[in-house]
Length: 152
Ligand code: ADP
Image (cartoon, rainbow, N blue to C red; front, side):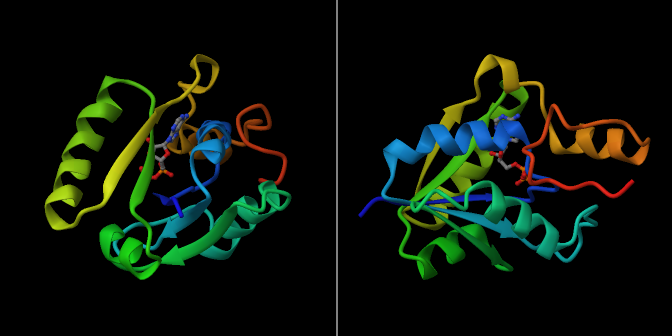
């Protein structure tokens, strides 16, 4: 069984993440979207909200599971018997950053990282820009899936 973990903050889930996830569905038997909890990071959306947005968006996709994790990503993958980490690439900056993480993870474990390139129309979208727009009371409805509810 080909099982992948798609780790991230998803603060919040964007149409860029959704693009990568739908394109990965035919490649794997199961994809666990794993919301990482990092005690040193401050999030705009609570863990519960971030998980609910993802669950609602993919409620009709039997291959998608949603979970949280509080450890190293490779350790979490081992607990789930997942052999693959899924990550999205938008641009060369993502590549440089992701390359170091993937090579480190490969050193720590046997887990392979699989990268998918986001489609051109979604490659500019980032959770951090979306959070800036929200802080300034802008409309992000064209950048996030419908399940993402903003209270501002
Ligand atoms: P992290 O805090 O781990 O970077 P994110 O939620 O920001 O978590 O991102 C999770 C994954 O989704 C990363 O692989 C990131 O490159 C990818 N990603 C983020 N935005 C997009 C996008 N617009 N298109 C494709 N992939 C994206």
